[in-house]
Image 1 (cartoon, rainbow, N blue to C red):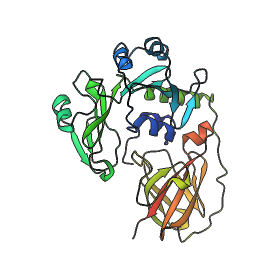
Image 2: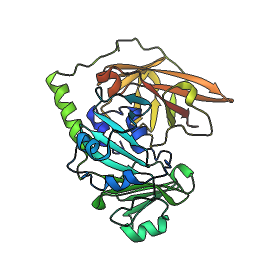
Image 3: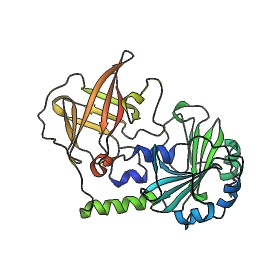
Length: 325
């Protein structure tokens, strides 16, 4: 159990929406605009105290409301979403409060002096050195750590300076976008509310039939390591990674007679039988399938997270590869 999950994941103790992860943590495409009028007006926004309606009063209506690949109308907004504007600005809203202002343009300059286009070296001089530097690893977005050359992609970096309420994504060792954050992690507040609703029975869970007899599968026995995380099976391509963030499920260990181990931070206990992993805590049966792609074997493992159990969503997939023993 090695990695600390981000706050929203703690809502149900397992990885929730990929939409959240993709939208919240991906650097995104830099937006180009002919005018900085929105950026100038955005300086009136109090990230710690203003609400969505305050944002609309100051900036006007956004182009759209999005989360992941979904688009919403003003009268049907979820708990968390992004308000997108034309001049290189997005605003993340959680429970009607501002989580962060996201700037993709050099027209905005943070109080520390950080702006889009600034070199990594100049950023460190402006905001201070990290407490730790990790090179060529997954990015887990931990404040104070400089993630450099993420997943071996030279020049792609991430740095969150919590004391200054700013986090930055880099491309080619230059700032690609600047996120101005709330003092409070609103996802933690959302997690607490969600847990209360689960405990009170206000939110009902769905379960699977896990009373399945053990059937052996010699092919699956061994250690499988995660290599990707996808929404659809055809999104996986060997040699490239679809998922931009860290892989919280690190590995699965299938042992003889249904014994089972895993490496991640989540409430999971259980066994396996041919074709399924049985989680006795969440009461789910997660299917697995071993397929051959370009002459190599991969496992597609159904990820039945809290989104499946509490929100009725379709599960995503971890893509895993067997470790040579």
